[in-house]
Image 1 (cartoon, protein in one colour):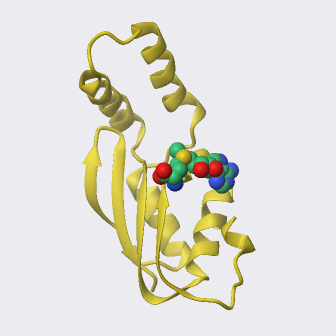
Image 2 (cartoon, rainbow, N blue to C red; image 1 turned 135 degrees about the vertical axis):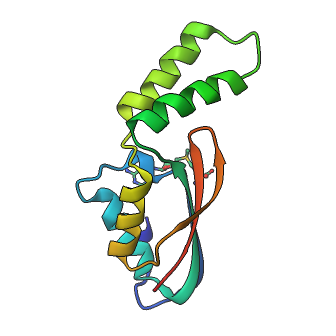
Image 3 (cartoon, protein in one colour; image 1 turned 30 degrees about the horizontal axis):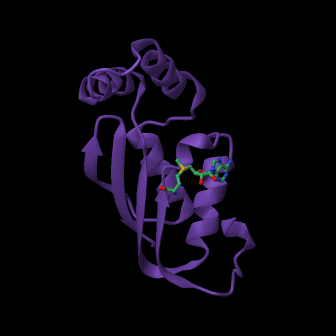
Length: 126
Ligand SMILES: C[S@@+](CC[C@H](N)C(=O)[O-])C[C@H]1O[C@@H](n2cnc3c(N)ncnc32)[C@H](O)[C@@H]1O
C-alpha cells in the first residue's frame, strides 16, 4: 500500500492504473490520492488510468466497448460484465476526478487518452 511507504522519501513520478474505480468516493479515493501526493516532490508527473464518466457517458461508452469486442464471445457473460462495471464500481465523472486531484494537491488533470470507458489523465504535483 502507498501508505506503507516512508513519507519522508519523496519520488519524482507516479502512476495509478485501474485502481481508483474500486475505491469509494466517501474518502477512499481522496485518501489514496493524498497518500500519493504526499510522497511526490512538487512538479512530479502523475499519470492516472481509470474508468471515468458521468452516468450518460458510461452508458454510451459501454456500448462502444461492447462494439469493440471480438465476435464469438458469450453475449450473456459480456452483458453481465458490462452491468457489473456500471453498477458495482465507484465510477466518478471527469469533473469529480479533477476536483479530487486538486483537493489532494495536484494540478488540474488533462485527459490525454480515451478508449471507450477508459481514460488516461496527466497531472503534476502542485
Ligand atoms: C485491474 S488491477 C490493475 C493492476 C495494475 N495497476 C495495472 O494497471 O495493471 C486493479 C488493482 O486494484 C487494486 N485494488 C483493488 N481494490 C483496492 C483497494 N481497495 N485499495 C487499493 N488497491 C486496490 C488491486 O490490488 C489490483 O492490483
